[in-house]
Image 1 (cartoon, helix red, strand yellow):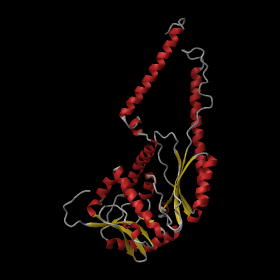
Image 2 (cartoon, chains in turn yellow, cyan; image 1 turned 180 degrees about the vertical axis):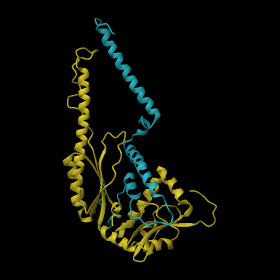
Image 3 (tube, chains in turn yellow, purple; image 1 turned 120 degrees about the horizontal axis):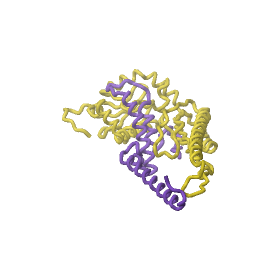
Image 4 (tube, one colour; image 1 turned 45 degrees about the horizontal axis):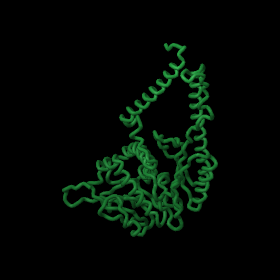
Length: 267
Length: 113
């Protein structure tokens, strides 16, 4: 993107992930973070890093701050990172590194990563044959009042009947109460869903719920959870989600399988 | 609406195909094993950015799917929309007033105050 006249392009090594073994061909055709250099593997003793050489001047803190504040750039980076990480899981468990993990050279990357080999192996053992599944539950929108829409007797088309003001206030109060009841019920459903799914999962985490969107007629998010689920339980997990959807009548979204991003750091 | 992929089998975790950007961001940005890199990227800022951008992105994603440009019509986000919301309310009030007046004139025995 940016062209700099600074001598021989200084390189940096961007690290996407660490895994036990990987055929370089699996990632060779991916775009990665920067056009030009291929995504490749970097041997790290008993492990393999998935890396790419990138121009250093494009990957400074400054450049990143700028990149991250542009929604389109951010999207491109996040998707590119995730694409390489996901592909790297082809032969077994993979540890994603946080977005923007950079070293000045392959040698520096090797030094830093090899010194963490024990930690990596421990995490790889824990997440082997597991995937992450995300579950979101939304509150149901407040139902329209049952027949309460036109309770005001109008004696005369022009003038409100006596008691119309009071009726109006009561209707408003009723609406507020129904909203609160709905939310309470949704929160109860969220807890129920989380508890049920948690039983099938090896580990569970709550993520921050996304804010309510102004136009979101579908209700707000009451649960944003993510679960570490063993491979052989994935089917069962999806079925349980479906069953919960039917039982609670709540909008429940399931996403996955993900590389277990959310279950890497809790060693 | 689910984004589920059952291409399991021998390849363990290929990642959901058309993953929602908000879902990717909340995993990619502040997750993963923490390893000190050579080039220091300010993670605190990233965290703050995440929150803000996640909201933005989540909204845009959903809106795009639903074919809505809410940021153009939401009074809190667009002054143009704020004006038009006021205009709408104004128009509605005028209509109601007009119909009320019409009703009152029909029942002439009650003088208006």
